[in-house]
Image 1 (tube, helix red, strand yellow):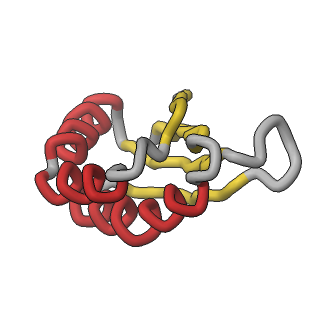
Image 2 (cartoon, rainbow, N blue to C red):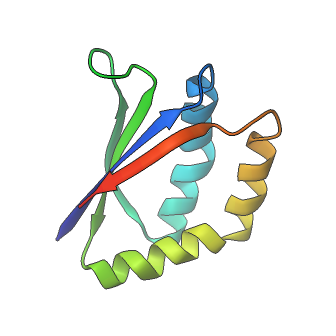
Length: 98
């Protein structure tokens, strides 16, 4: 098993919109594609209170490559991402670790 930690730094003033998109759009699409999420949270005290952090479970790096590519190319994701970013991007910076 491989665990991926992903941290998104929201564009200032956009954390609420990012959380809404994550809960109502991103998670359902990840689930449909077969990407298993372990959990997600925001930071109350720490380096940035403007972050969304989440973890994904992978059987292998090959599975991650395949499923993440499917997610990135998913027509619903592309459409909903564009809709939710009409007033500007929601993620200023993203990083991940395995």
